[in-house]
Amino acid sequence: MAAVIETHELTKIYGRQKAVDHLTFEVRQGEIFGFLGPNGAGKTTTILMLLGLSEPTSGNSRVLGFDPVREPLKVKERVGFMPENVGFYDDMTARSNLQYVARLNSLPDSQSKKRIDDALEKVKLANEANKPVGAYSRGMRQRLGIAEVLIKNPKLIILDEPTMGLDPEGINSVLELIKSLSVEEGISVLLCSHLLHQTQKVCDRVGILNRGRLVAKGTIEELAREGIQAELASANGRGTPADRRGLISLEDIYMRYFKEE
Image (cartoon, rainbow, N blue to C red; front, side, top):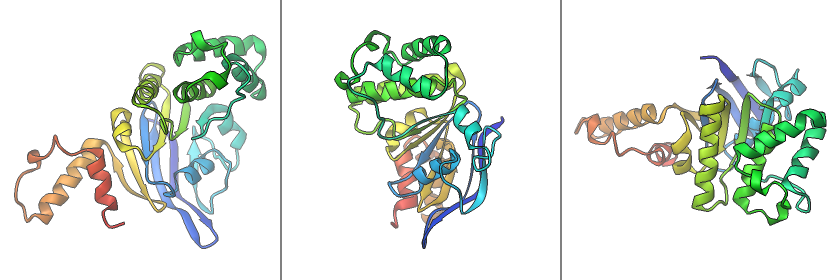
C-alpha cells in the first residue's frame, strides 16, 4: 500500500533541546495512524515540519509525494489540518465561516457552495449551518473544524487532539466521523493524541513518541504481542502468550514504554 507520509531520520533541534530525534515512520494510504505521546513528546513539532511550517534540522519527509521544505504550497493545497484549538468567528454562522475559509483557499463561490454543503452534511451540521458558531458546543465546533478541512477535498488530514475537552457523547461522535472518513471516503488520517482509550477505538496502527523518539510502532495486536513476550521473558517463561492476549490494552502498551519516566 502506498505511503502518504514518509519521514526518514527527521530531526528538529531548538538550542540544546532535541524536540524530534531521528524520526522515521510512514502513514499508509487510507489508514488512520495514531501518533501518540504525552505533551512535549514532539507531536506538534513533527506536524509543523510535515506541513512545511518549520524546517527540519536534519532528515527529510515526503507528504503525498511532495517535499514540505521545497514544495510547502503543494502540501498545504492537498492536506487538511485541524489544530487542537480550532478558531472561528463566533458572531458568524457556520456556513459563513466556511465560506470565508473557502475564499482564503482561493475557491470560487460556484465551487465552494457544494463543497460546504457536502462537508456540513458529512459532519452532521447541515441543520445547524445557519446558527452563529458562538452558540455551538465544543463538540459541534470540533465537527465544524473537520468540515473546514474537508473543503479542500484532501487526500490526507492531520488532527491534533481532536477530542480534547469533549464529553463522552462528543468524543464518540468525533471518533465515528473520523472512522467514516477513512472507511467511506478513503481519506488517510494522522491522529495526534495522548488519550489512549479513545485512539484505540479507531486507529489501524499507532506510533508511540517519547522525548522526540519513536519508541514503538505497529498495530495494537502487534504491540500487545511484543509486550506479552517481554512480560514472559521477565517472568522466566511462566505462562503463555494466550494467557493475556485479550487483556492487553493500548494503555498497558503505552505504560510499558513510560514506566521508567
